[in-house]
Image (cartoon, rainbow, N blue to C red):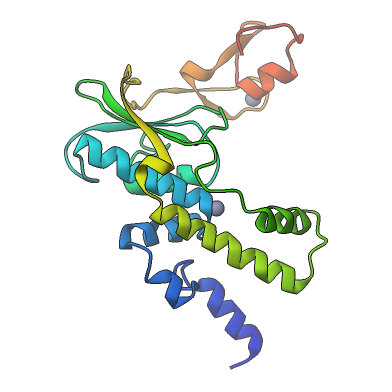
Length: 229
Ligand SMILES: [Zn+2]
Ligand SMILES: [Zn+2]
């Protein structure tokens, strides 16, 4: 088999299958699913995994039960992928609210009574690792040697595994909250945008000169001061 073929085959493997067996065996099976969905193991994914498990445990709910849940994530980083896999609250199902706050905070809520658990990662949960921070800067700046990149990858995985084993009280602040549930997902009619001709869900459409318009076209063809976009 040619080398190129080998490489192609490796690309087809799941992300968890590419992990070192010693690392893989430390990951619970549901976490392996999150790794496969996300495409790699990383500290951020581990944060979302731990937060999801803590919230589900406290709410006493399991994934796929009849209990209706919705989630609220405050980051668009890796952890939100784990949250979707583990809790089953996803963007597409309409039971996930995304707030672009850049915070490692994950909330899981029971729709029936609005009671939820909010898990916020503690600032400095992991002790600072100057060697890792310095290597990351070099890797990001494209200055790292192949050996340094390898060492960075090793430390990156080590951080993920440390987060996985961190005692809960060191990892996060957990508290009970009451949250107003978002409206249930519905199928809504579409209208045609008068500018680009594409379909746009009616509640998201805007009016420009009396014509239905999608939001990007409303911005482009607006006068720069409209407040209803
Ligand atoms: Zn990641
Ligand atoms: Zn348009």
